[in-house]
Length: 377
Image (cartoon, rainbow, N blue to C red; front, top):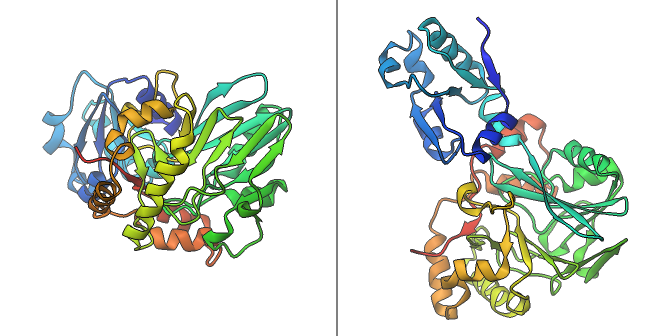
């Protein structure tokens, strides 16, 4: 038989187009419950592949006859086996090329903003909820919070007629491996990070630069720093129009400040950031965050994840319009939620204290992001 193979890019298009899809996920139940391919019109059946080794008869009556079926596993092999069983039973299906590993690593590029001075692209890591950006001006590109798939940013810059010259990380990431240092080594670009984040390799400290200016771009390091999610978190204000908020402000929440085991202390920093620094920014500024929780809820009508600061203030009124004590209580409640898996090891890698090969990085990154504090309903 010839198994029909769909790529992560093709599945992403189905997600964005809100198509119907029936997913037969043959991973373990705990892995499925922790993390799956999410689509507004997707249906799911989770049966571990080892329960189907003798054939798919036990689940045949649970499979639709009028919908496309996608078989998903961790790395592709198990889904291929199950798809072959389905084919023998006369049931057509497809598999996800590379399994959930490829889903975790795919970047969807979309244009988010353009004027006479700059063009801005968003890279959506659909399987992780991570966001990164490219700002292009007169042949130079600035990359914000790059993932480790550095060749993709270089290729995107080339396609836009630009060269990567500047790279910034808004903070020391805890849920994925940063591509900042790797991209700088590959392109020779300047790489900026807060010195207070404790990285052990060479970089340009953001503490020394209130602004980074090139061509028609003025990138302001917002009030030097916007601590809270980490002590050295920063936001980047570009041309007084766009706020790259890292993990400080999301469309539907704020960055969680508990990953350093100093919940109350860092939450106070986050409160001061929101109520002193962010409060001075106009409502019509477009906020472009470092993560999202739900494509359905946070992707706007223009096809990117972001919103005006005014809309975010309304959406998260309980966090943007409350007393300090209520804010701290709210954050402490959210801090009891599950932390990003492997975050301490990921932070050590991003700090340059330990190294990891590609296989190890893939293993550490598997799973969803858990970097936000959402308001209580």
